Image 1: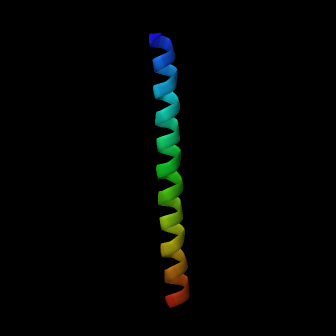
Image 2 (image 1 turned 180 degrees about the vertical axis):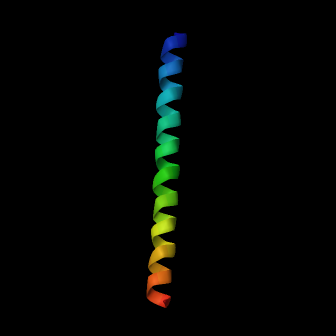
Length: 39
């Protein structure tokens, strides 16, 4: 049972990290695009 919880928590952590990575990378791309358009 504890091993199942460990696998579930690892999966959740990976999903959260992936979501944060996608969000931050899209933010960075948006800033770069704004700089390129305004510059």
